Image 1 (cartoon, rainbow, N blue to C red):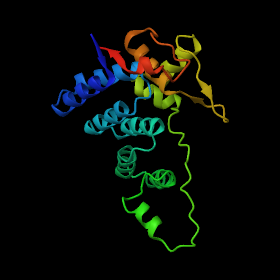
Image 2 (cartoon, helix red, strand yellow):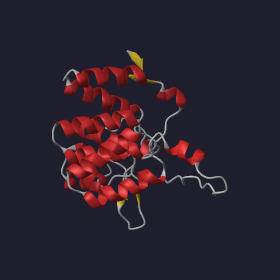
Image 3 (tube, rainbow, N blue to C red):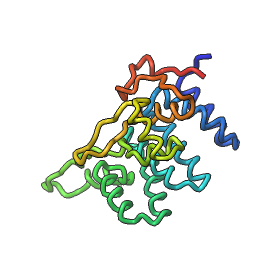
Image 4 (spheres, rainbow, N blue to C red):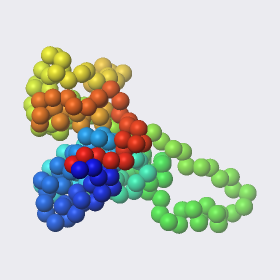
Length: 210
């Protein structure tokens, strides 16, 4: 049966609200299998992880949600509150600065204050920051796939999964699509999607199969 992304998301949210965690998680993963960077599914999986007191896993999902859409205040609030709860205060400070740069911390009166400020005072627009939260490390991906890091490295060495790009330090950095495909591989033993790209056509984004 084919349903739209929005129908699937609403179905997952309803299952989540009514305590059917496994059903909700499956639907969210189905959404991500088709649209690996779908932010609402990522954020809600983070909320579910918090519900099981898995703050570290929640952070990974919140970071991916922010990378996909940094303009949603709730994503930042969830991420910052979790960092504070885990006593990662320095990380929280840095994250807050990034949120502040793109205006995610602005209250409703910010625009009004800018209009009412004294004439002649030069207005400077809030700069847009690129938040590089999307790429995950080998350790984080192994945790997401619920396998040992050595198992993930073995899959990379024997070609079961393709090598991701590396950053300037030579460290592996996995994209949204790669992470989702690896999770699927850990569950089924096969790669059923093309993970060379992190985007799908608009037509593909309008539906998923459940």
